[in-house]
Length: 79
Image (tube, rainbow, N blue to C red; front, side):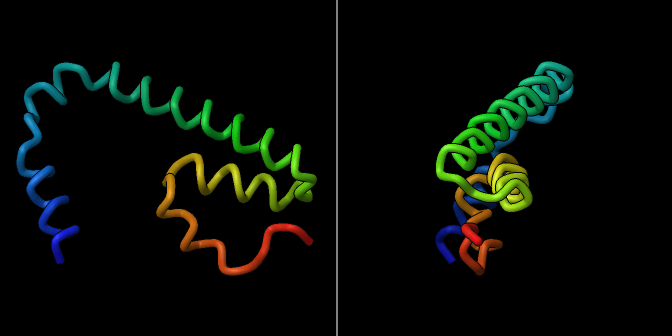
C-alpha cells in the first residue's frame, strides 16, 4: 500500500510543462539507455553461456523494465 502511495505522489509531482518542453531529449535518452542496457545484458548472457533465444528474452525484458522484469521469469534460463 505504501508503495502505491509513493508512486502516486511521484506522479502527481511531475511538472508536465517541463516534460513537453524537453520531450525529444527525454525520448532520445530513454532509447539510448534501453539500447545500452540491452547490449550489456546480452553480453552478460553470452558470458554465462545462455542459449541465444533465452539470451534475447533475458536482455529484451530486463533492458526495459529493470528489477520488475524478474517476475516474468518463472523458469531457469539455462537449458
